[in-house]
Image (cartoon, rainbow, N blue to C red; front, side):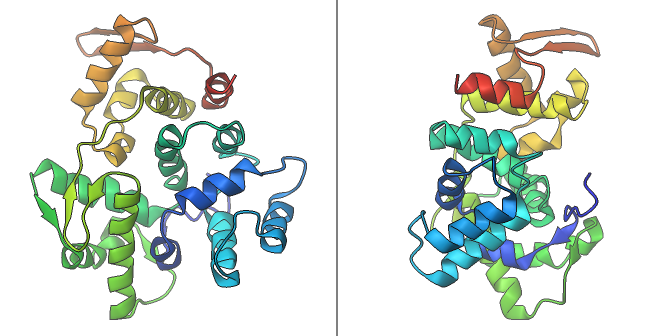
Amino acid sequence: MKADSRAHIASSFTAIKGAMIDETYSVFSGWDFERSKRENLDRLREENFIGASSATWLRDVAKVLNRRFDPIGRDRPLVVLAKHGLPVEEWKPLLLWHMTRDEFLVRDFLETWLFSEFETGTFRIHPDDVQTYLNSIGERGGTTEHAWAEQTTKRVAAGLLKIAVDFGILRGSNAKEFVSFHLPERSFLYLLHAMRDESLSASKVVASRGWRLFLMRPSDVEHELLRLHQYRKVEYQVAGSLAQLSLPCSSARDYAERMVA
């Protein structure tokens, strides 16, 4: 983990500003790897090449992207895929994965609280339910940058729900309902490579909490692996408690290059 990691900071600012899916895709589509992160974001603010509706929103986009992503390092594959025009529906799940590597609140909300609600068969989610969850984030290692006023907590709760809607996990206006979510095949394969990059064994890949972002249980992951094995897109063998997984590429970065080759 990098020294300036914000992985345990529960940021009200980024949660309230939301997913920024279209904005992030547009910025990364025009990213120049010959320039530094600061130079790219300065160009964004100066040229507004994403067509932001106001100077304030443009500033907020730049600030959120600066906090969320490391385009030269960890998040480079995400930028490469946007630059090469990977369809947004395949790119979106990868955006969610990358942005939650260093954003405690969104990751914890989806992996811990929302997935638990999904597992217990909750039908509707209300903002008040999320506010109750937010009162306990410190118990799971989250740290707020400052004490939140009641209105901030309400805005964060609404922001987290909207992020889940934007990524296709929930739907609805005030009360939200779960959507039957399907992870595209190439997105699933990319995430397998990304988890393998973290030196996870085959069994730990299957059991990873990261799949909860997409409402997937270990049994769902294994079912998809067996399907891909049948079509010779991966090699997945299980014998008792032992599992072996062979993937098409050596890393997520290599697989990203293959996706857009």
